[in-house]
Image (tube, rainbow over all chains, first blue to last red; front, side, top):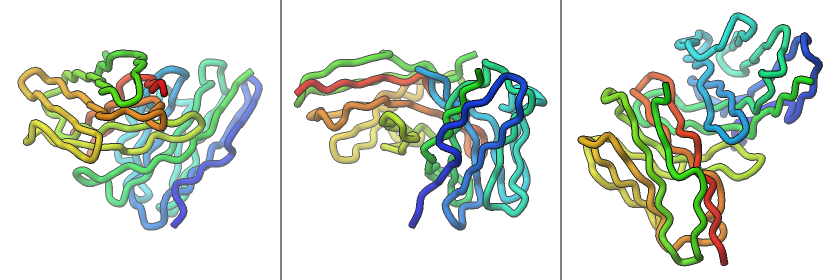
Length: 115
Length: 111
C-alpha cells in the first residue's frame, strides 16, 4: 500500500505569509506526528495526534503554528505570519496506534523556504 | 537541553569495515531506542530498535548495543557497503510520548 505522502514537496513563501502543509498518513493509522528538521539536525517534535485530537502539542514553538486532523486521517500543519526562521523540512509520520514499539513511518517531507 | 547526544557528526569507512555510531541519553524513563536511516530527499526510515531490557539486538549486518547503567547505546554496521552511505539518527522515547532525535551522523562508505 501507499506510504505517508506530503504535499507540497516544496513551498516557497514570503515573510509574513500564511502556509498550509498537508500530510496523508498510511490508511488506518491512528497516530500521526509532525516534526521539523533543520539542515544538519535531527527531526524536532512538533505535535502528536491520536485520532482527531492532539495528544501532545508541546513541541509547537509558538502560537503561529497550529495543526488539525478533523477526520482522524489527513492532517494539515498551518503556519501564520511566517518568519525566515521557519524555513526547514517539515516531516510527517504515522504509526498504527502510537503504542509501545510502534514503528513510525515517515513521509518525504515538505521543504519550506521563507524569503 | 539536548535529550539525546549523538557522535560522531560524520564518519568515513572503507567498504567491508565496521561503522560505529554512539548515542547518550539523559532521561532514565525512556523505554524505546530506535535508529533511523535517512537518504537525501527522503524521510527517515526505521532501521533497528531496542528496549532497555536487553543489552544487544542484531538484525543482519546491524547491531544495537545498549548500556543501561551508562545511559548509552550504539549502532554497529558490520561489513559496511557503499549503499549504507546515508545519515543515521538515534532516537529515544518514553512510550506514548514524543520522540527525541540525535543530531545525526553522516556516513560515507568508500568503495
